[in-house]
Image (tube, rainbow, N blue to C red):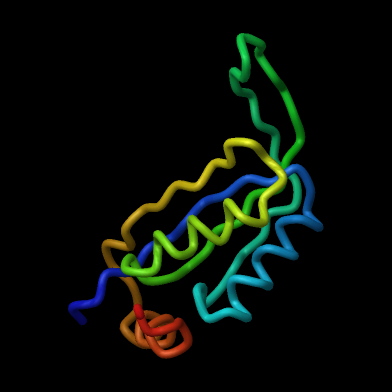
Length: 109
C-alpha cells in the first residue's frame, strides 16, 4: 500500500471538547477514527510559568495528505490559543485496517 497514514495527537481542556472535535473530524471525512483518552496529566511551560493540568488526549487516524486540512479544522474549533497538534507516520499496520482508513477518509481535494 503506497498511501501514507498518520496518527495525530491533540490535547484538550476537557473530554467534551475532545469528543466534539473528534466527532466533527470523523463526520467530515477527515479522520477515520478518533480515540479519546479522557484523563491525562500534562506538565508544560506556558508564558514563563510551569503548568500542571488535567487534559484529555485524542489520537486521530487519517492519511498524511489530509494533515493540513485536519490541522486547520482543529485550529478553528479548539479552545486553546496554541493547541498541540502533532502527527506521527504509521510505519506498519494491518493491511485491512489501513485500507479501511483509506476508504472512509475524504479524497484529498
